[in-house]
Image 1: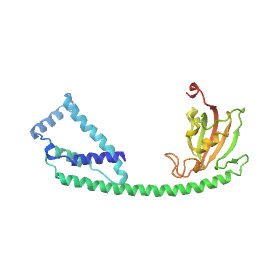
Image 2: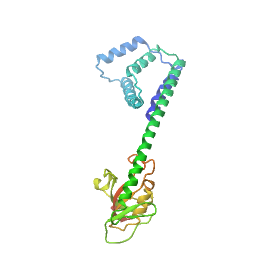
Image 3: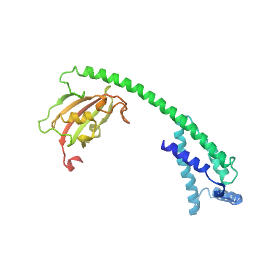
Image 4: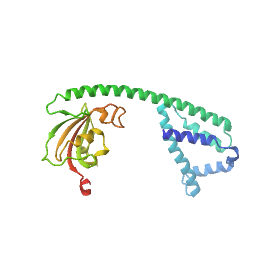
Length: 267
């Protein structure tokens, strides 16, 4: 969205320029300057030459990115026409007057907004279908998981079983900071996150994570390893997150290493 607004802002800014702000360019001097640059094979040594070329290069870099983002909405920008428009504008022979420039950009913006809304509606519909499928799959998975030996279910719907018991000790409270090793997977076994893979335990305030973790870790003692099956309503909910689709039931293997670890233990 930010990229789109940038290219629109650039276009509207160009369209809003008034006649009294146009730069008068001596055509002969401009032509001579072009020949000089060509003769030097772009060996730009003068500060102003470097600045001028840099402005053009930087503009093209930004616009290439912006124009690329428009392709998502089926809009192709002819960069040759962009270059021609800039050239004609500097030479004072643009095809459109100020009124028509503004009208062109307004029409373009309205068309883009229509396409963006259509794309957003399409993505929202697709996400809704996936979320409904994920809910049904999660419900079925949890129903089967509940039948396994050693599985317990809390009032919130959190399901857990003990994988390994530690040597006993304190249990964390919601206001504590904990240090854990963990692996998170979807119900099909696909891993989406793991401190084991990073070979680095994770430390966080227990009250600052998803509800399923906050509740589940308070059931553990230091040294315990539990498996949690967490329904969406105490995980990432109906809408999910950047990596988690909406209504996803998640499976975590969590090992509680420490409660309120010292600074050096967190590194």
